[in-house]
Length: 295
Image (cartoon, rainbow, N blue to C red; front, side, top):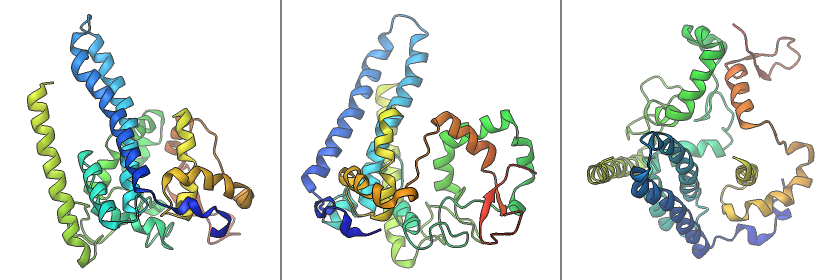
């Protein structure tokens, strides 16, 4: 894809504009928090809080994802022209969400290199060969099992990836994003991994103090579809991504793919079909692998 086809201003990183998104997203996140903590306990029926809190969790989770996306931008040096600013903002925002910044930044770098999609060198989203599938997966290849897999993936999948490298690249020893001496990181990255760990411990302490004091998608498609251009030009600020995407669509033509499957159907399809990889059965394309739903 020709970089020259995209208007040059799309690659300009505005410090003021980037911080305006930080302020906007934090404000949107604070409002439901204020409503939940100030008024949920005043609801007239005792069952209403049990209904209101799960709704709050879902809405707040979506809103705080936008904060995480800004931290993701910082990791790619797409937030500003200053690396120190990107690292400070990138450390503070995800740490408040209990997400490691530097550790994730360095493991994620291979997702934007020539190693992407490589079974041996990619760091994330590595599918398992059929021969490596654990025996107990046979018992999850049914409707209740798939529902359980979806539930676990959407609730604890991310923490399990950070803590145990679930779905990541396999190494010959225990691998963890919290371990500065782990095989994921190089020697010059280990100090910053320590900083990420200290940040997480500080955030946990702050949350503990807050709890002690307090007691107890639709339009999103417009954002998510811009991730294609992000993988072509990862330093481009996210607020230029839609404009650049519109420029690239006619250039990419048939190579710009959009799956309009509703999210609930897509989740079920992935849980049912994306289980392992094996060579194409007819052998016509020996270098192509396909997902097969069979044991």
